[in-house]
Image (cartoon, rainbow, N blue to C red; front, side, top):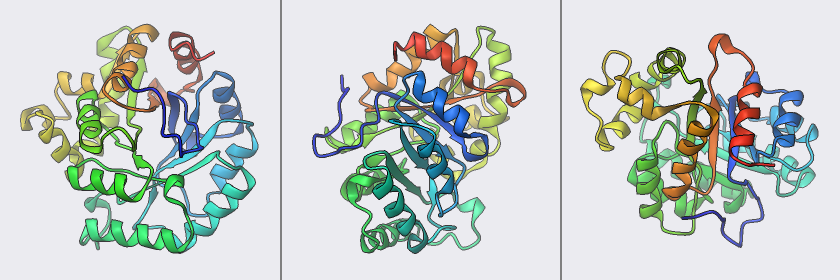
Length: 287
């Protein structure tokens, strides 16, 4: 059972963090998430290369790590994000992690040679003096996972299960970071929880080739993926139940080899995630 990070890495993520799209993040949420004992805030939804949203969250907090999940390689040149990284790394030492990724082919007309593009982008980050330990790569398949270990601190898998975490750890060995995202709904009514989680999973992710291919590699079937996802698939991708039950599902990633879990709280009508995060903080014994 893994709990620590490599000694050469000075960024300390802790065991659990918040994953949330950048439009839903602000100084108030950041300050409370830090006070609740979470170790990181993951900025989702392809934040802009100027990283001003990350800067505002760092300025509003004292200790918590802020990370991108992810800066999109197709839309944000390394020459743009590199100076932004250096600005934040200098102002907030050991508190910013640059997560980058290739996105998915359906969103980009010129989606060509994705693996070569990732290599070229990491080369460009080298030229921009973004250190290997200061960046991580969104990766799902075996080849991209290996690249994440060879060229970055590690991987940020999205829309996965503890089984994928186990496979990623076995493939990468004991050194690299494995920090999966896990969607959760803190609600004991399974039908209501699925009604909240299914739309988020089905659109767009069950219509995107890189995610569906990964689910098929994990043993899910085309029938599971069809019609917005079987109950079994939705339950695997969106942990639900009371806070203690959800905490157990999150801990399963750590037991499978993760160093850290990025928790994406889903709520009805886009309500604040803070009530659920408070319950989970207590269940996870973060304070």
